[in-house]
Image (cartoon, rainbow, N blue to C red):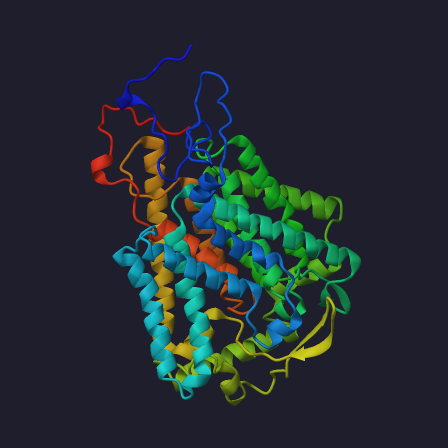
Length: 499
C-alpha cells in the first residue's frame, strides 16, 4: 500500500547533482520511484539521452581517447596527438554552450584562480629572450592550466557528471593497466635493467610516465569512491570501486615509477584520514599485515621491485644514474632562476640554458628502448620537477600564480568537503556542490598531483588527463553552490535526504 505524501513533504526529485541509490532522476530525465513495487522501465530516446549526457560527451571522450596508441613520431616531434585534438574540441564545445547561454558560470574566485596563471604565462613569454621560441610553451601552459580546466569546470553540472568522469578515468586506467601487465608478462614493455618488462601501456617508452600517471589517478579515484558513506552510494558501487583499486595496484608496481608510488601512497593516506581516523588506522593495519604475509610468507615481489623500493631511501648514499641526472637538472633549474628571478628564462627555454648551468656529471640523455622502439638516447629537456621547471622558465611570477591557485583549490575543497558532510549527515547549511565522496576524490587527486609534481612535469599525451583532473578538482572547490539560502528548508520540515 502506497501512502501519498503532501506536496510540501515529498522527497525532492533531484538536487541537481546528488542522487542516492533509492531516488533521483534516471538517465532520460524521468523520476525513479522509491517504493510501491518495481518502477516501469522508461523509454530512453536519443533526444533525452543527449539532453542528459550530451554536455559530458566531449569531456569523457577526451579521457577515453588516451586509450589510442601513441605513435613515436608524435612524441619526439611534438605533434598534436589525438588527446590534444580532443581537448581542443572540448574547449570549443564549452565556448559554444556559453554563447548559447547553456554553460555554467565562473565565480569571481574561479576567475581569479584561472586568470592569474594566464597573465603570468603571458608576462613570462613577453619577457623571454626569444618570445617566438617561447610561444609554443605559452600555448601548452594555457591549455593545461587554464583552458581545459576551465572548460571542465563549466561543463560539470553536478555530482552525477563528476562520478561519470571518475568512472571514465578508472576505465582508462584499467585499460592501460591491462596492457602494461601484458607487456610485463610477455617481455614487450620498455627496457628496464636490460629486460623489456617495464609497463608503459600504449604510451610507449618515450612517455615513460604516461601509464603510471593514468593508473595512479584511476587508483586514487577508485579508492576514494570505495570509502564513500552508505548514503552516498550503493554497496555494490563501493565494492566495485574497491575491486578496481585493487586491480590497479599490480600495473602501478610494474611501471617501476618511484614518483608515482610515493604520490599514490600519500594521496591514499590523505583520503583515508579524511574519511575517518578510525577507519584509516584499521585499513593501514590491515594493509601492513597483508604486506607482511604476501612478502615474507609467500615471497611475492620480484628482486627488481625490491631494488626499486630500496633505492627510494638509498638515493642519498648510493644514487643511480637517473637520480644523479635529476639532481644535476634541479641544480641547473635553480641556477636559471637566480639569473632571472622575476620572469625566468622563458617557457620552453630550459634546454637552451641547461648546459650553461648543469654540472659535468650530467649525462647526455636517458637510455630508451623496448615496446617497439630501438635503443636511442632521449635528451633531457626538463628538470623532472614541475615546480623547478616553472621557477626556472617563468620565475616568481609563474610559481606564485600556480602555487597560489593550487593552495586555493586545496583550502576551498577541504572547506566544501566539511560543509558537504554537515549537509548530508546532520542537515546543516549547504554550500557545497555535491556529496562527500566527490570531495574525497577531489582531495585525493589534488594531493596526488601536488606530490607527483615533485618528481615529474608536464609533457606527453597523458598531460591532457592532468588538465581534466585539475578541472574536476576546480569544479568541486570553486563551482557555485546549487542551494541558495532562500531554498533551505525550515528547521521543522523534513530534510528528506536521498538515501
